[in-house]
Length: 509
Image 1 (tube, one colour):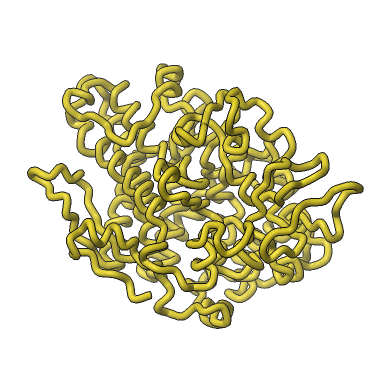
Image 2: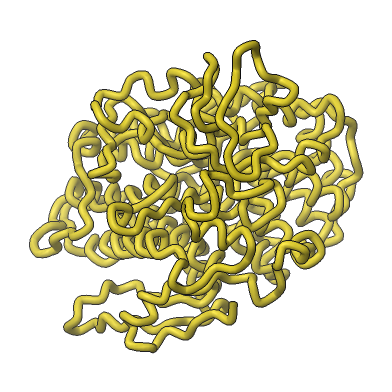
């Protein structure tokens, strides 16, 4: 296989080569003073960094943790709605009870994910600052001005798309409420209206070369056009908006023809330290353990992630993994059985202590234990070895969250070719590339085969539930767990309805 050039995207690392130190040293705050704050390009760069920062809290919680005790790993809360975890895990029903209720489709508005909701709106607020205050910045080129706004609108679209995925109809604003000329009571818009608003941002930021095709080493941290293409495909295909299928397919094929990305030859290598920002990576959320001082008292401090601790077994004894795991996410036996013999993705995805344990390895079994765990993100021994703090090593693993990979580009392009009646041979070719890398025989690119392939390729990466929804399979696969059409969207947090003075309409859940 011919390897293609490697380009890097580190959403929370360096924004500008000329202000690397200043960028890294900025500590995001919940309240950002605006008066006389945005006059130079460096000011707006810091504002953009602050808009990226809430992405780091997608691994487990927000500053509400000290009062709410809420974990919300972005991929995990997607996947517990699907069928690849046997149970939520943890110590039992009282351990993160909102996750236990989500798994059974019994979530209440009082238990709904308020910390996630607030963190996402924090990101929206900060993105709006960049869009609306950049007009105050002097001495900035038109190209740079457009690029800053495009990044901020991409982020705003990404944040709103999370709300749209989980709640459907939510309050929407592009000018931040201040209680004066803009009311704190923000109108709620419908799921269809929110989709159109998200697409407005994505159509704008992906046009007229406002975003580059790739970023250089001196600009790692800035989203590129192809990352925005992938988000656009994600949103359009979940909406099943056939009017945009052709344009999305064209963009996906532009990625394929760009000669920038290629599949990582060994699937297991994607999930190592060395596999971060590999030739397959289109967008990742970056975490680091050096410098690293993320603490329970300040989870927005620069540093690593707790997600590997979250999905690692409790009280592990052995040499391969970390010892302080929480034991969430026991993998279902059905997922392992879904892989064909010889599929290299199976053993890279699932750590099965029933068959693959080394001598002396053991752990404390927790709720729903199957002996199998999410190997992609399990906390590797030494994965936080550069942590410089003293109290919270479990928060500081240097494991990036992989959001968009090139294999997804290939599979989504194949799917759209099938859905639009395009060239079957091309669709088959794209699917074959993914299966060749996995070491399994080629298959025809049918919708059923592609749905199966999404499951095998992206197991426990947050895809499965939304794939079942858009393929109209959620009722058949999840109905026995309590899923039905009215369970598609989570209940809106009751505290937000109360704060809206009753103007927010609750989902029928």
